[in-house]
Amino acid sequence: MDGKKSITFKKLILLFAAVILPFLLLGPFLIYQNRTAARGRTFSQIQSKTDMTADALTDTMEQLQHTAAQMAEQTNLKKLGIKAYRMSPYEAAQSILQLQEQQTSIRNANPYIEKFIIYYLHRLQAYNSKESGVPSFFTFTREEYEELAHGHNSYDFLAVHDRQLTEIILPSSGAEFMIRVDLSTEAVAALLENAFLEYDDYYYLLDVFGGSWQLTNLPKEALSGLAEGADEISIDGVRYYGFSAGLPYGDGRLRFFFSGDQLFQDSEAYQRLYLCFGLIVFAACSLFLLGSYSLIHKPIQTLVNAFRHINKQDYSIRISGNPKSDFDYLYQEFNHMVKELETLIEKNYQQQLLLSKAELKQLQAQINPHFLYNSFFLLRRMIEDELYEEAGEMADTLGLYFQYITRNSQDYMPLGKEYHHAMLYCEIQRLRFGDRILIETDPVPEKYSQTLVPKLIIQPILENAFNYGLRNKVEEGVLRVRVEEDAACLVISVEDNGDELTEDGLEQIQRRLKETAGGNVQQEMSGILNIQRRLGIYFKEQAPPSMDRTESVEYLQASRSPLGGLCMRLYLPLPAADEKERGSLYD
Image 1 (cartoon, rainbow, N blue to C red):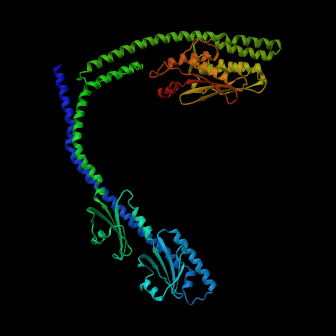
Image 2 (cartoon, one colour):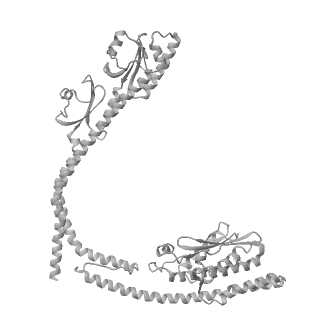
Image 3 (tube, rainbow, N blue to C red):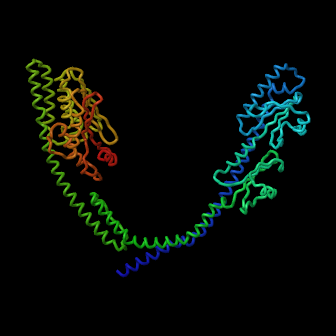
């Protein structure tokens, strides 16, 4: 025993070393690597967003240029811009109003347009888009026109006019006009202020034409001290790091500045991990103690769980362990005990099965004379009514019917013969009722005709339908027998269109069938209840070994038929179904 204690102690030491050494060796290295990677990811994300914002501004400028260029190609505008082209004052006024409506629509549709103005040089008049508080018409001098054009010969260009960043479009033909589109400073500022919503405080600087036009939220003292191309600035003693992207227009450049506290907050979290490293060592020691405890607690818990399986009647449980374990002897003795217990239970089950077969014999004997009285009474009535041909046919059918009962003493019969016997009963009832009742039947699939089933399980269901469902049907009675196959069983349904079945009556039938399936033998075992009981006994023996044979299964179920009367469904497990498929019926 001392040797076993020594082995256990060595295991405890090895467990502690295995837990603590990885933390001691890899912990600081992984923390440093993650800190560096977090900083790199943050810088990359901010630079990527800076480039995206610069691209958005470029797209905005290109959209302004494209819109103004399309406007410059309109025929009405060119006519108004050519002095030699003769237009009546009314025509000119109408053309100017139409163009002004277009200017207003363009300005309202694009939030980045503050003003959309067209200058007509030979008229010395300019027309603005219509908006409240702004004159839609004003005059200018030729010198003002030339100053705005800056002597450029290009078709379009970017300029700074009246502290506004402006797109200028000149005509490509001989017309004398100019389109001026002022960029909305408020809209651009809103774009830059909302570019990084995840950061509480940052600064931006949009610089065009080497400082001729700037848009920024930097303090004046920080802006004046900012060197060209500087990547870092200091504001109120806080260091800010810059990220920039170029613009293709006006030699522009967009820059954002973020404080170190915001940029490095993720990496600083890894620094705090260094402080937590001591806690990890403490946790490792605690884990060592828990591991020591589990060497005793876990084997005992395994035994407790195994006994719980026994309480749930699961006798297949076995415990396997390390032969060198201190608990191996207990495990082996437990397995031996369970094996002996399983053997005793199997012997008891076999005794119960013999009792069930004896009960099955008793229940079958009860059903044999059930149809005899009604059959001979019907034959006697036919003879008294001098229906000799029908009586002869009835006698032949009765002979075959009772031959099946008297010459076959077996408890179980092939399904094909059992179903044929039920069809003989239907033929007898057809002779009895004539055209009053229409009988519809399906054949049994040939591959299941040799499947063994308990004897006399279909005819009593048909008899129940005729005696209770259709007894008051003077005409247009319907009896339907269907045979259907699904994944787990063969379903034989018998339904009628009788008018006698109430909801209370249906509930009573369903309740009695369920009680019989559950093993209640106190009520009278006749009719459909007899079938339910015998099927339960038979298929309990046929159930797979892995199934709980103590569970009750309703092999016969009642429901409301679509025809209006009662529908009885008989469920027969398929012999070809594997254990998993058959299990779906027992679950």
